[in-house]
Length: 95
Image: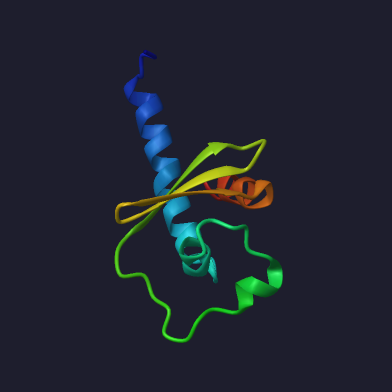
């Protein structure tokens, strides 16, 4: 098992908090969670269902920047989403 320093923990949790805010602002993300994790297209992102809202926190964990693998957690659900461009934008938002 890896040893984690306090600095590493703080850096990773700070990035996760930044990702949560950025992902929560992405239109169409609730639709992605409902559809079982299929990657949303640009046109699908604009088609947010009427009255769509988050009833509980949404947490995103960027697992791999090169592949764009992002784990999304909403309540007791976990969905893996792959979007290298979004992962890069989220990473840049933390800098």
